[in-house]
Image 1 (cartoon, rainbow, N blue to C red):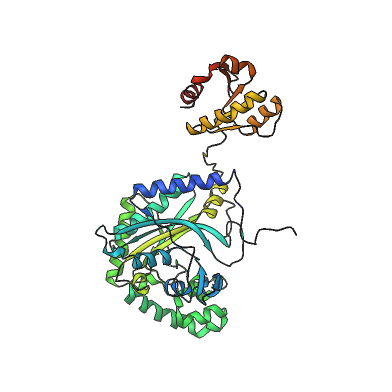
Image 2 (tube, one colour; image 1 turned 120 degrees about the horizontal axis):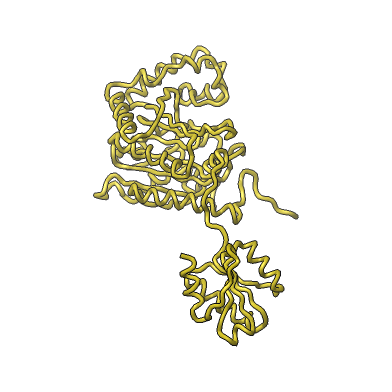
Length: 423
């Protein structure tokens, strides 16, 4: 039987994995500059966490979660997103008591959603996310949005669009909710089953429906902007003011609705305008979630964050024709001629590696010509040749592949010679 990879997953092979490493390291370095610390949470959690944290009216909870019962009869779910797990850890580990507030965290790891696989979208995908917990200052909203934009721009992406909206506080949302119900209820039978269910549970989610997005009532639906109270309006104006001061370009989109139930006040998305990127243009989404910590059992604590999939980021880079400057090849390939030289090469390659030099040798008893071809395939910067004659003289021949220059070097000083050349 020939085994195949499950649908909606992928193998990230050598040559591609280096791109992922580059992106992850860049994101880690950027988070360090913004004083965000890494947190690692379990890949699976109790299902109730996502029912409460993500919201039982969301597509994620209703249709996309990988949920199973463990041997103890507990309902367990592979995490479909990162925020609920981070907030659970924040509460469980009493991080709200840390004197250094806000708590600024980032995470990277696999998430799981059962949805139709398509370009840049998988059932197992890697998400990078940021959460800032403990501050209701609109300046932290601007910081988080600015950090998200900088991650994309640092990789060279230019065809980006940032859209922001305010979902308002609880009072504003209730007023908007009532207006939405009144707007849709007379013709809700014309909408899909999901929207009919959402009308009473969470009418805001109707605006996020992909099936009915072209329905005429969508275009005339009440805008949350018109229902913001003075406090919410002032908050949103401050966020916009800070973004402007930080030089972050944005558009206000009153129709922007995030797909998770826990958002309030600031919501945002970063999209790609690159030609050929695809119908789904969103790269990154995030927003403020001031009630989530309480929902998961903690004290009243404001929070804001964002997340993006590395798969979609790679697709955006490809759409703009951007190549990442990932390290290719090795530093040195050791070619051995004869049994004694072969034995010596084992030790020599080990010494090179311990000296911080990426080195390789032949393990298939290939002829000299084949070993040089192997060095070419591995993109070796230098090829070092050692044989019986070199062993007698305690030397080694070193060839720089880029220039073809070849020199004889004392074996005792070979490693130091390479170190200087590789600087």
